[in-house]
Amino acid sequence: MYLISSHKKGVSSHQVSRDINVTQKTAWFMLQKIRSLYSQSDSEALTGTVECDEMYLGGAEKNKHESKKTEGTQGRSTKTKKPIFGMIQRKGNLVAMTVKDTKAETLMPIIKQFVAENTVVYTDELSSYNRLSKENFAHGVVHHYDNEFVVGDIFTNTIEGFWSHFKKMVFSIYHTVSKKYLQRYIDEDVFRWNTRKMSESHRFNDMFAKAIGICSYKDVKKAA
Image (cartoon, rainbow, N blue to C red; front, side, top):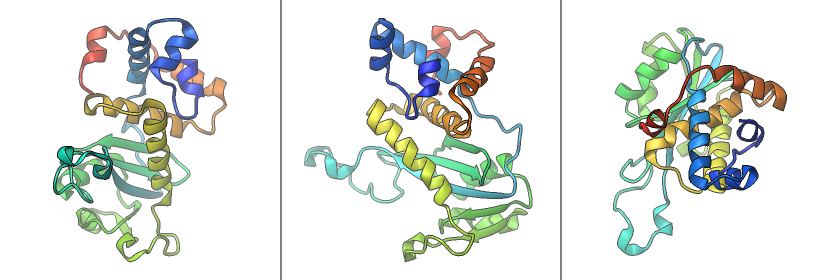
């Protein structure tokens, strides 16, 4: 628990197996049990100024052999990539999760669940966010397609900073993550982000306090 909480980008099961002298399979099981402690909660609404954004995780088609490439995977396609949606309160906490798509019908209920009414919400120009102003939110837009990234106080750089950190964690430490367990890795990095200003000892204590249930191998093998 200390190893996974103290490493800035996480720790692989191969590294844990070497550090504590167990098999890689045992180390993987232990790490998944620990990640099960990270589940996110809507008990405290995001308020003030909140940035919303989406990202897509998956292999780049340009890196694949011609015979294995999939047509029509550019941009926001979900044919070979998994969409992830995130909301972050400036100078506050972050929430992120996998979603089936980035349509308004999918994103709006999530925003309404985690973000308090009358909150200022900043997004990019994705049309799915157009309903925000009709749902008791003050909505500001930055147009990335027009190379517009900051307009006064309107930007999504904070949430994009988390996406950058998350991608580095996945690609540099874990290399590949299955869709089945992707949410657990998101939960891990969200926990790390939300506790980044804590000391290592306080972060460990916070994690240890969550370890009050019993987790079986069957629980770990369940899809996130």
